Length: 287
Image 1 (cartoon, rainbow, N blue to C red):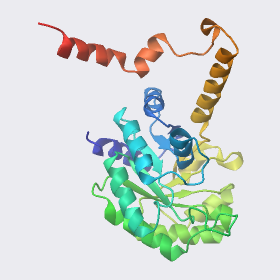
Image 2 (image 1 turned 90 degrees about the horizontal axis):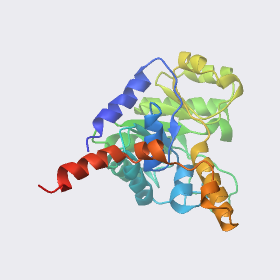
Image 3 (image 1 turned 180 degrees about the vertical axis):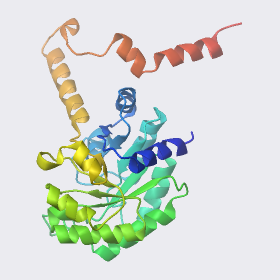
Image 4 (image 1 turned 90 degrees about the vertical axis):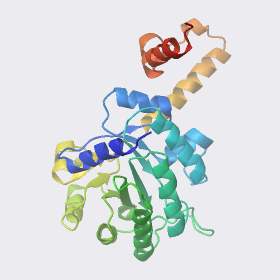
């Protein structure tokens, strides 16, 4: 498949003047639903990957190969530009290079590398950050590893949550100077914090989900924020629906009485049934 067009679509979002919500996706069908509903971009988060692939909490026990394989499955299902959370790059700066190579091959449009020390080292209970210097080298390694220059490399920091705003700004400036295409900032909650950050940076920004002062997409767009993440509700809703359905069936509810089951036209659309019928007729029909 040709991955560059979807990467160029995401770069157009970054170069635009609007702020969008991505569709949180976790597999081929969720990505198709998001694309069919008109989402400009999809988001595949590390926490979502841990749930979908391992049924595990977000403590970075997933491997790069597992993550990349799921990214490929998602990307093969359609043409939705996909942002992925590549965590810490699965190791040091050399591991970051390998991460970029694998995720680029898997078709992602953008990936973020963060400066959190992951997994948590022995003897610690709270998350902490690596040094700015190591963070910069990770960003440089990521940029150097990509073969398709349309792939977006995002420098991510949670410094507003872990340290302070001044540290967050210093890290953001350093990653921008290293050459990242965008910044993902986790933990900013007020407009004055965002405006202080934007006074020192110029590349597009991706913000984590937060309400209050930072819920207005028009305001965020005016500050150079191009993507505002939302809670990853689709997979949580899917888990709840699976639980409730299996529980009801186990307790004797007749299958015909189960509500909210996909069928008919929607099922056919998500599964691309029309395409398969066409291919069956074209390639398997006798004569």
